[in-house]
Image (cartoon, rainbow, N blue to C red; front, side):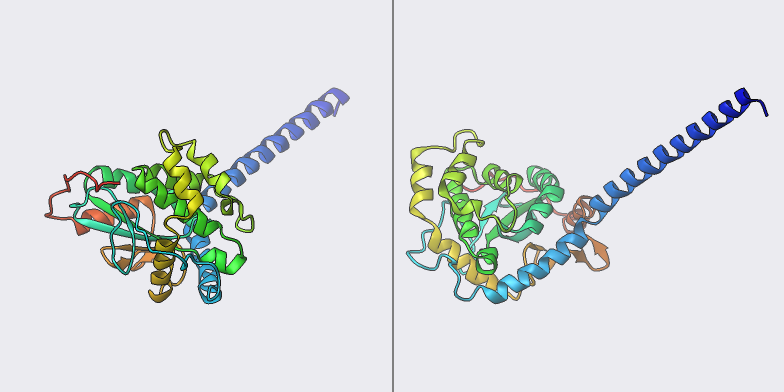
Length: 273
């Protein structure tokens, strides 16, 4: 073989090898995306175990028991306090027990929030958010409590959903108690138009709803839940699975459609707050 042909052959071989490596890298990137997308449920299920540990260790932690129980505007639930969202006459109800410091809760919200908002807007679904303080008890600090109180203050201002989503979109690492600082919570309120007001700041700094958050956390502790997030559709657990099906945006839509068959969508205006 001539030197020229040999060089051409080697170059061609190198090019084929490079192309093969690029294809392998592309497949690996795609595989990772699929794993992240499809594996969220598995991660959430594993993280729920952390919630169990937190639930067992949050015996003497600061769960907001001190002080009067001052419910935020429009709160419901009695002994199981909750903040409702969506049309109150929607035929199906999604109960979500969450902790603002919980990484699995943030992952759940990242994957599912758009679908929940869509179903709420259509009148098919209303949600009830129950706020827990498990991570404070497990990791120390007060970020779960402080963030939950701030979210209740946002409910008073009629901005709960936007602020709730903002907190999860800006959640610090689980071991970082950044949400334990009221200044940080007020800083994040600036991302929600119209929320950063003197009344909101005062509510956050005074811990106005600490007692109510503590009552909600007690309801979680007494509820027999495995961890956060705990998600129920019309009283039936759907996290991480409903029967043999894993939770996903597509499955949530299907489950709600099945539950609502023959029922009219809700049309009433959301509750005050």
